[in-house]
Length: 415
Image 1 (cartoon, rainbow, N blue to C red):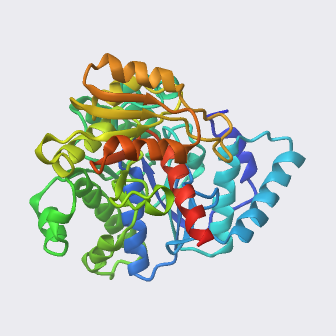
Image 2: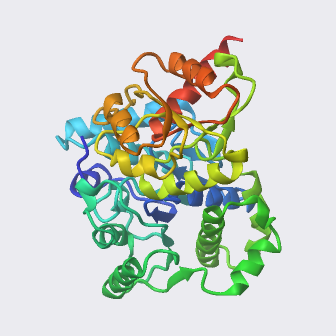
């Protein structure tokens, strides 16, 4: 189960000094991309770095990287066993995510990284990663509605939780496209804790010129452009403290090589189900990210208003109808599926396929709607038949995306 609070993680790490500086990133959408861009630039600058994001994608340890490489599986289990023994011996009763966070932080100590890029798990104020007391810089990306039962039902309440990562005297970089009411909450919190400076992006054309004089702007979607700005500003702030002579703009080209699986990812499933055309994978699971996905699909895949076939699963507790309304269009097809058990996250469960179909049908736009509670590969075959060489998208949950990637990997390993 999800248990927020800093008491347990603080006990887990009380005798483990954090020997590296952190770029600490909160927000509802864009956190993962900002983490990926920042890590890529650090590697380009030959700065030994670690990255901790959540959830994992295929293997439980792939949420931890050292210099852009997934941490060694053996090292992960070795450190995790030490952390779990400490938890048991001291009767801490830490949550799964707290154990994972402590494992990542201890791995970073062992690997002697200089800077860690740390993504908040949920919220910020009471998230286990907020055990970090002296980050180099904090970052707040786009804030939307998600995890309302834990963070609050309004954007302002959610923003208050995200703002909890701000620290006295530590610069905070903020996605300036957030709503005015969210910006007000962030400003108020920054003033209370004396976070300094508070930088809203983009705040000036100089930053845009600096970025797009190096990178090809047309290769980045609009929301990705903002994430590039935020990541670059965070790197500038962090390196101004640690490496003041480094010319940070020279690190920007590394962003072009960034691969962030499960986000607008084109992938072949020919080895799995025989379809010749690639499909699109995207883990959009809340209204804000679903709107971005819907806009992308409308522009890139709907040639001549072609219907799209969607394979959708969602986690329990999501606003299913709200998410679906962001990307379903007239004559679209939907195959509702379940994702499998999530390793290390036993509290996560898949929404009932009938609820997904009912929500989709209530929108009154569908061509075909089909329940598929069987195996995922069978559901994909069904979707291929329904799509008939038309565009096909897997969305609604990163856990579903993970299942697809895991299936494809398993087939390719047999070859």
